[in-house]
Amino acid sequence: MTLLQAHDIHLALDGRTILDGVSLALRAGEVCGLIGPNGAGKSSLMRILAGLRPPDRGGVTLGGQPLPCPPDRASARRLAYLAQERDIHWPLTVAHVVALGRLPHQGPFRADGDADRDAVERAMVDADCAHLRDRVATTLSGGERARVLLARALATAPDVLLADEPAASLDPLHQVQVMSLLRRLAHGKGSAVLAVLHDLNAAAQWCDRVVVLYDGRVAADGAAQAVLEPGLLRTIYGVDIIPGSVGGRPVFVTR
Amino acid sequence: MIPPAWIRRSPLGHPLALLLPLTAALFIASLSIGASGVSLAGVWADWHSGAGGMAWVIFTEIRLPRALLGLLVGGALGMAGAALQGMLRNPLAEPAVIGVSPCAALGAVIVFYSGWASSLALAVPLGGIAGALIAVALLFALAGRSVGVLTLILAGIALSSFAGAATSLALSLSPNPYALAEIVFWMMGSLADRTLDQVYLAAPFIGVGAALLLSAGPALDALSLGEDTAQSLGFPVRRVGARVVVGTALAVGASVAVTGAIGFVGLVVPHLLRPLVGHQPRRLLLPSFAGGACLVLAADTAVRLGGPGPELKLGVVTALLGAPFFLGLVLATRRRLA
Image (cartoon, rainbow over all chains, first blue to last red):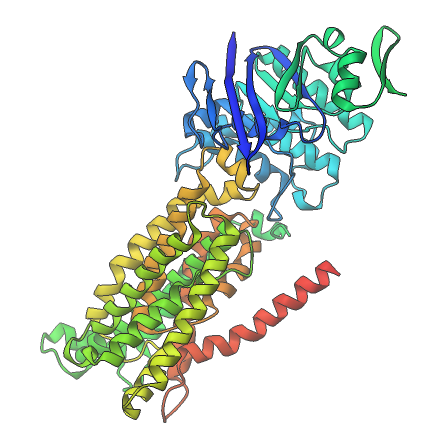
């Protein structure tokens, strides 16, 4: 079942073409990796998919309905966006930060209900930050902060999660934790997950499907093993990347 | 910094539980203290007898407007400061940064200058409110489609400097030294010699402004995680910005129009109370209203205790107390960054 669909997205900034006819469908129960070189338009595409910026041409539908830009409350309940910047502007506690994910479910003057508290609790346990609940979020390490902000997105209980570099600057353990969490969200709860990744090994290991964005276009879309072949990698990254296999798992090494 | 455990655990955990009784006490103190020495018991006796004696007149004509304005104006300044700091995600923001108070002051000064002030009792506050509303219109025109933080602050600074310069121009061209003195004293900010009519004029604006600011509360919480995340949570940043700016213009514009400029309340109060609400922008709004009311009522009562001779101006007192606090804030920030 297609949850989020982008159709023929075009975007130009200052006369420079960023996205040139991108179409993409995110299906329920699937972790999709979005890869491509720096400046390929990945973050712009993510922001358009999240309804944070309008495309010049083309449209995005969420569950068959056009996604408003900026998103309304009903869309915000179904679609969560995890920004690349891990900004937390006030020294809030971890529990308060995670609870912000429940805002689309609440009215302007309604306090937290039981459903909200349960969702926050579950999200903190899932993202392995329940033990941090009373810590001040601005004093956390980079990895802890990434997990707390992921818990914030999970607390919304979204159908679609758009995560812009969720694994960036994480050590191997935390990278594995975050990626396996995204996978549980898709496979266990039937959500659709789109994650921008730079680590080809992680993309091959954790994603059901990989979309390669290059020069504003979708250069490839399919299973990691099929898509990540040397010719394409050489074209998009400009270096030789050799696919290999260790213990039955694909690995990618630069020459 | 999270609130100390004793605050979180105590039944008085919410700062309003402390601030509301304090506000009530200061309000009553403001009603009972004054140059005439009239006591609340005397007022009560007067009212009971139905005669409308001297005590009752002093109470309704002098004390009551003063106390009500202290409550409303202090509250408006405190809450607007909290909302602006939340929206701009900057603890140094206050109502003056978006240029609303200088423009309200300019509007009032133009009315003084033109001489309408003597023909219509409410001309000065009306001029101030008009100035504040024009400021908002200009702010949106200058900041354009994106009510981004930086454009908003820059436009506000430009407006503030322009309004300040225009005010100085009006003062330097003033043909009448008495009018000049009157304008200068008015600009220093005071609650003295205001009437209930002025309270009735300002109260609806402050009420609507405060309601707008309160309704932006959840969005301010969401903005703690940045503009993109706030938008993705269903809070359009442009609309939130417009709500906070218009709310501030109504509440603070009407306050400045009636009382003149009372500085630093909007800066100091949210900053003092923020740790008590766990730094949550939404939970800071109501306590900041109560805290601002407390500060202005206390300062205004202290001004009256100053003894014989001309009263100190309220705006001077709050600025004298506020400026060192602001310096301390700067030093603390510097230490944290060092």
